[in-house]
Amino acid sequence: MKIYHITDEYIRPYRVIGYLLYYEKQKAFAIELAEDLKEMDAPLFFASFLRRGIRSIDPVWSKRWVQQRIIPADRQNLGVILRTNRLKEYDEMKLLLLGEGRCAQDDCSVTEDRAGQLPAWMYRRMQEKLARVIPLSGMSILVSFAGEDLQARHIELQPVLREEQIERLQREERLFRSVRLQPGGQGICWGENLSIPSWRLLEEGTALPMTGKDLRMFQAEAMDTAAVCQRLNCSRQYVDRLVKEGRLSVVRESGHSRLYDPADVDRLTW
Image (cartoon, rainbow, N blue to C red; front, side, top):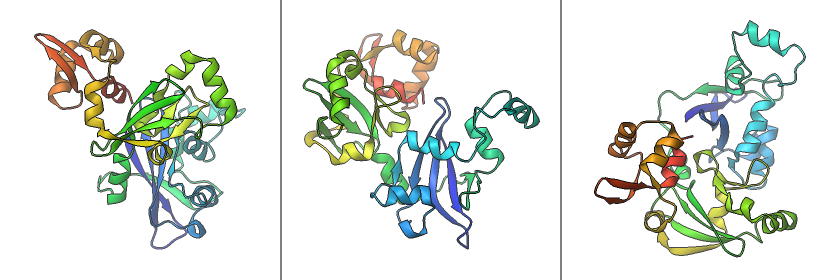
């Protein structure tokens, strides 16, 4: 993951009004708006979210913000433009950075965060992102969060999704069971067109007397070393290295056999 400042150059001295997160492996975006950014000071696109009390913008809308600032993929002379800018293929992030994220709609620009000194509110929000999701019976799910002191939550989907979305998941049980985390734990999704952001899940449902750490011990779909190697396209030696570095959790170990937390494996693909 790479982090970029979103700076409003209309305000002097220039002010960082949020952060653009880019998940390179999946080419996905997410935007986090600053805690002190007010609707009246925000560019129009962001003001519409602040009006509803939303400061974490999901990957779908974050991508739309990026696409508003770059050459569209269906541009007639796209090939010429790519060659002129020495790009082998259409890459949204590279195109965004070529113009420093500027566009005629506002005074925002995008620059990479190289210092790594993020504000406290960013670290807190990262703890509130999802760590795992488990589909349950009765159109409900169990979720836990990156902050292992945060309680897991049991979520009934009926109040969260629209009626037609619930009906579709009820008809297609295989689709319901395919629920996955979005990159960075920004939310959960069933394919590209149906998702729920992490902040909504933190507010919904019933808090359970267990944390993410507790839930990890009970998760059934553990992966063995061979499955991890296949998923990550790597060697067993590299898996051992991931364990030593604390980037991959061992759920159970018996002799030379290990089982791993699939949520950690998923995060390594982001």
